[in-house]
Image (cartoon, rainbow, N blue to C red; front, top):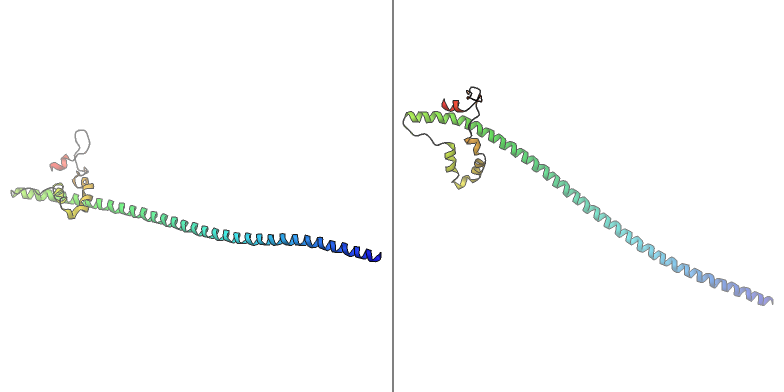
Length: 176
């Protein structure tokens, strides 16, 4: 009986070993699946991080592109302002030259009339001739846009007599 009991005890131990081995194999199998899932998730995480890096690089490229566009806009705004200032200076210079030209022309016309010669053509009349020349196209476009500067009557100065309604007129200047 002692042998029988010893055999039963060994059989129980073998049964327990078998059960524990099966349990261990199941856990080992689950552990292997978890390791595979872990490795797979690590690969995915690495891919996600690489994609995130690429997206951030693309974002920064777009941010830089927008910054450059804004810089270009600022440069163009400054260029436009400078061009407008240059245009205003040119218009003022043109007005001054016209103001200088007009009395000189009137004096030359008066001298020519005393000699029996015809008056010289006005700038407005000469402008019509210039506008027919193709080489002056750009200049003429500018002149056409600002022709009023060349053909406008000068403002009444402080020595200009007042009209009947009390405002200063150009009539007194034209008569002198």
